[in-house]
Image 1 (spheres, one colour):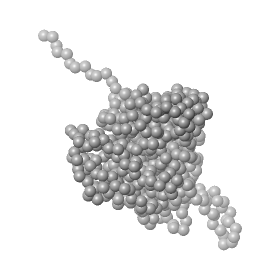
Image 2 (image 1 turned 90 degrees about the vertical axis):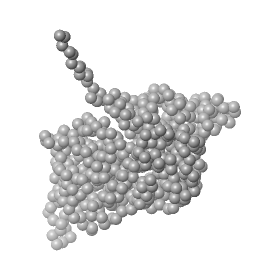
Image 3 (image 1 turned 60 degrees about the vertical axis):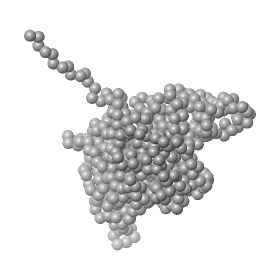
Amino acid sequence: MALLEEEKHDQGEECIRDDDGDDGDDSKAVEVTFDPANPYRRKASLVSSEAMLPRVRRDQCLVHQFLDSQRRAKDAGDCTPTPIAESPVPSVPDHQRATLHPNSFDAAYVGQADQQAWTRQMTADRLPDPDTSPFDDAVHSRMLTKKQLSDMAWGVRELSRRLSSMRIRFRVKNIFVLTKIHDRDLIAKARDLTRWLLDSGRDVPYVVYVQDKLQANKTFDAARLVEDVAAGYPDVEASRAAVGRRLRYWDDAMCRSRPHMFDFVVTLGGDGTVLYASWLFQRIVPPVLSFALGSLGFLTKFDFDDFAPTLDSALNKGVTVSLRLRFETTIMRSIRRKPPTNGGDSHSDEDEDAVHRRRDLVEELIGEERDDAPSHRPDGTYEILNEIVVDRGPNPTMSYTELFGDDEHFTSVLADGICVSTPTGSTAYNLAAGGSLCHPENPVMLLTSICAHTLTFRPIILPDTIVLRVGVPYNARTAAWASFDGRERIELRPGDYVTISASRYPFASVQTEGRRSEDWINSISGKLGWNTRQKQKGYKEWDS
């Protein structure tokens, strides 16, 4: 039963809570160790990115921190198992951010035997004080060896499978509200939700963060909102200042640098709003509960008309969390070389551009790499939930790219572009490009060409343990452009490439009660009309 925890321990994962306050020292999480001399990862990919990564606090990883604490409690051997049906609803200990809700399981729950036993064991354990061992620098997944990447991906999958059968109650204090700031109807709904959270009828004095642009918005009317909420308290004057302090505002920089501030995320909109939440929280993502107020809504599971009972149940009774695979993508820039000299201090007649065009990207990425002359440097890392697209951009001609998997050259691609999608993104751009539909729990990467100039480039499905690289050859006629979940469009000049690998930071999505596979099938059937046709009529017997 402790296989998952032992696997995580082998990777060096530590997910704990620091109770010294929000102003405590930040630390970077160590999730794996790696050997820089490993031949299966490019040395250029092992260089730290120039972009400053947010400092990771010890209390970020809610789910992993909870499971790690449960493992320590089990190792201590100071617990007495109790039947789930007889367990009372627990309160969340002060030093913990989450705990299992023991009554979230039906006694007749049908599932794997080891999963049922593990669940009973987890709910019976007492949560100990967290460890406060130090952290080292964070490691990108592109730096992992093949075994480490496989172990990491397996650990996330196993964790997601186990979490799908249990309800977790989080200790929620700070709630992050996200909606479309240019949609007046959604702003009004966000105001209603914020007022409900701040109301005197709540058991917990929640601190609600809304986008900073809503502070001066006339539809949101923050000043009037504070007055309306304060009117529900006995002492209106004293409550006005208290409510004003509990209504706060977030911006992009806060999400990048202090994601640990937020215990819970509520989105109002469609799938694009959920993708924006993933984009804002580039590393650790708080649990995200999404209300369906958009168009299709594959990622939005809850009806806003029932937002009050939905949130009351989620905050007081707990939620079921699904960990959705995200990709970590890193832009790698080619390092230009000086032209050779003719024995003197001056360069040869050959200019630097000509030397650059003569270089071979395939040889640089799969051939032997020189220690003293790295070929590329990292230039920005992004976590994506749907897909990365490398296409021709504004160029009138098709793009020319090279495709690599681990340290093998897969193929050269002449097309409008390439779409590499997560299972979650299989119903988005991947679908439009002719790719396969894929259940979001599949541990795969979907590779689909966009208008390839060939009859034989079929969509392929790869395991999530591969590190893909899509690069622009040095002799390509034009540059290519990379976009990440439809955002942050970046030019890839000849010689540049982008790495794509499974992220160590999955997207924690709150699920509705019920069977998840059935929910996904209903989504593609109802929203996309999958396999919709008139049923075949039966034969009629001949009249004699």
